[in-house]
Image (cartoon, rainbow, N blue to C red):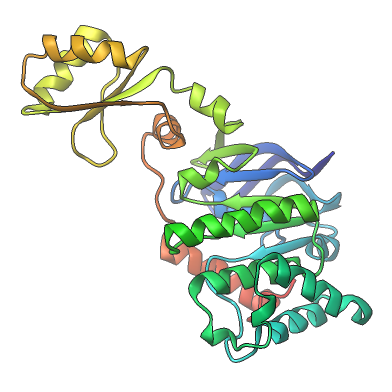
Length: 330
């Protein structure tokens, strides 16, 4: 069963088409990754699904409810965890959750039980009576995830859930997210700029210039790259670029870090000795690896994924505050 259905969705701002006739679906219980570079239409699409924006054309439903005609039902069906903190740091963890429960009309007879469940899930139950201002960044993010689950949403939207956290905390957050999916059966709609995190998704949609350019499982997307990725650095990379392209008939790109060249070949480990022996310039270093989602993104969009512009994020936050108040009430 599909819990999200999007059909020929279009969103225009004057002459600018931010979302250009996209269609996709998300299955119930799925972790769905939504990736795109700055200005690709990712934020606009999510804003439509969360009823923050009305589409110019097309149709979308969440949990069977139309995002235009049945906004109240959609809002009750979803939870939101924004990139920027929205907790009240002058309240305790328990008070933040109870306030959220009040806003969402969670029945009083189940509030305490539900609060205990979600706090234990993210390992914050022992800190439930502590002020949020005493929490670390990772603890605050875990509490926000717990808060997003208080009203038992069918879909949880996570906007960059681990941005700015250290690798160990990021890993722990993902342990909680995966556990949450198993225990709650909630569908997760995820945006992230960490490609290693996108590997957790069951399927990934890549959007660029308002259009979905690919949608598949992580493994299927990586198979699109074709072969191994070879990265080489020489004393004259420009001369090496022309030689490699002409000699081996491959597309040569600048490597993501700006140092050296990268290209795709079959059986990379066997190819490297030939590359070094036939190079007209001295080879300083060479490496071979299997394709990653970074390579897929670069191949499909021609550029690396990067953080959204602050102005675009701020516009979305302002829309949320105007419509739902400072705590993001739905």
